[in-house]
Image (tube, rainbow, N blue to C red):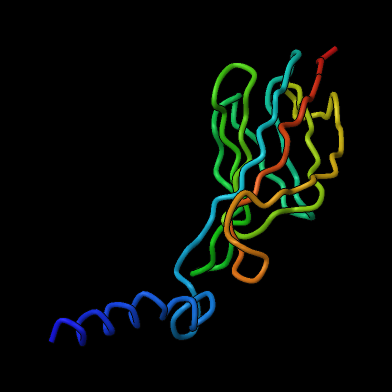
Length: 144
């Protein structure tokens, strides 16, 4: 009886390795991908764009992501963490490029810079995915 239980336990322990990355149709594990932006200077709000989707802060506070169609996750969100630290987060992907803009009180662009992002896997595997990170971005802006 003990030998049967030991073999059953070993079989259960090996099951994930034999099954690859997930059981059934897919894995339920999701990762949050974040890019920190150190923004300095004088500006009324910050805007971040990934591809054609842009999100602007409202008066320097956190903002909601562009609203996607019903039932889909937003592409990303922008959140102010402190006076000069902002965080761009996504549940969907690791964008290759990101654009940061500083806006004045009339929403005119006073500074703009594009960044190429280099993501590094910090866990998981190429086959199954996993958490990734990219270096923080420095953005200097000023409103004239």
